[in-house]
Length: 118
Image 1 (cartoon, rainbow, N blue to C red):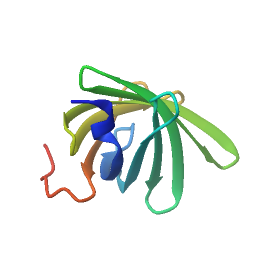
Image 2 (cartoon, helix red, strand yellow):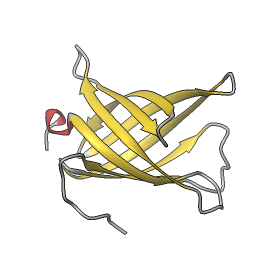
Image 3 (tube, rainbow, N blue to C red):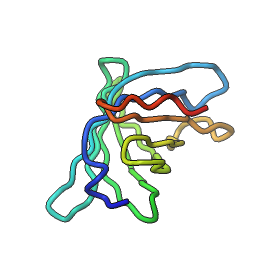
């Protein structure tokens, strides 16, 4: 798979970095900058914007992300295994998240009819 194949819009289903079954839904937009690096923008639960930049190698996409909440900036990293150009299966961690857990996230191309991977 090539990096340019990942550019597009995805729907997102995930769970937070804690022991509670807190799930979320949202969207992810992937674009390329002038240096062919990934630029990411998430919209989680219709109101939380997150931004990131990353890189791609061997069907693995790594994105460092950040967002603001309550006048604080939160930072983390998400790692996606690119199952196909339409399905990304990932895990993530934030700097101040619970180190005993990883968040989980699956992304499906917005026009894709792929089913959720368990």
